[in-house]
Structures are given as structure tokens and as C-alpha cells.
Length: 69
Image 1 (cartoon, rainbow, N blue to C red):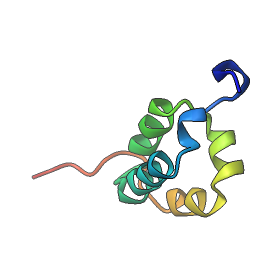
Image 2: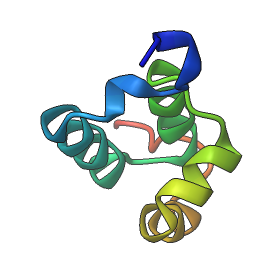
Image 3: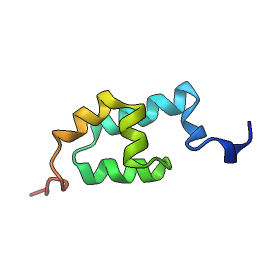
Image 4: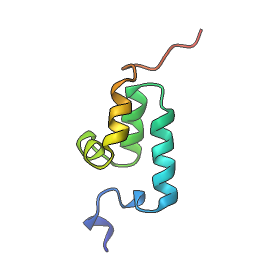
């Protein structure tokens, strides 16, 4: 399979996929998740379609990262 034929092919290995899911689960804000999606070449729509359980978790996150005191 040619890389151009598959968007987000780098998420096809179990190691890469596991790392991606862990990053999303540990994210502190929706803004952080947006950065993770960008890093992995996923649109929000692709994320919601491929990972609906993670998308539900993200809905409960604050929009901006919490500020450290």
C-alpha cells in the first residue's frame, strides 16, 4: 500500500495506535487533543469516526489547558 493511499497510516501499528490513544486519554484539554490530532494527521471528523469512545472522553475536557499556579 502506498503511503498516499492511506491517510494516518502511521496509526496502523499497534504500538503507534496505543501511543496515540494514551496521549488522547492523558490530554488535559481539547486544545491539547487538537494538537495531537494534527501531529498524527487526523481531522476531527476522522478522529470521531475511527475512535468514537475517545471522542466522547474529549467532549468532557475543558477547551483550554489548565493554568499552573
